[in-house]
Image 1 (cartoon, rainbow, N blue to C red):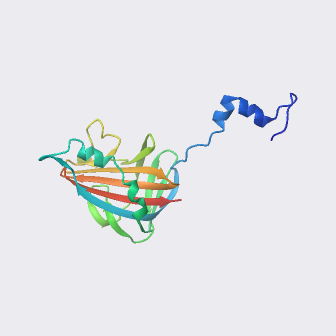
Image 2 (image 1 turned 90 degrees about the horizontal axis):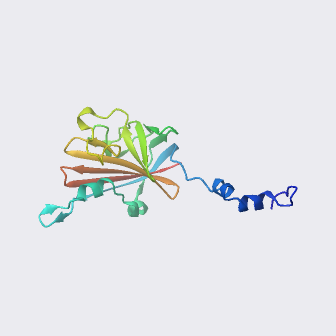
Image 3 (image 1 turned 90 degrees about the vertical axis):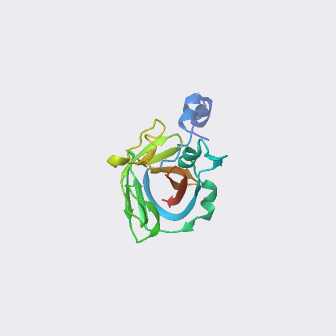
Length: 192
């Protein structure tokens, strides 16, 4: 216990009785700010589900904003990329080794050679979205639900890059929809 004051009540007991002090002593939620090193990856693909002969009404958005956290245990080890997220929400990436994996660059091009880019994060609840500081002029998202979440939308390809903390690791999920039908998801696991 703590040291008692003049009233004979120690500081621990005082803080326990004081709801404001208890609120202050709650552990803070972990921050995504810091330096993260790529440690694993996995890629998955598919197609928008159909209802009868029509694509499911929310199929595209469900994929874009979804995750595959149940697949994290199946990821494969890899290294060679550092993601630095600053306290102001800006981020930079640096390739530290040659690495080959499915990668959608800042202009939406799928390439196996990782081309790092920089930008800003936008926090929404427990998720943060990676956005370009200067969006590609022909691929600026428009729809009300897409601005602030989608980093690239040229009408044919839509890319949503999101971050979530899962078991003290940073899970980056790059969700891609092409021609409103074909789906690709790249899961990158980073550790501090």
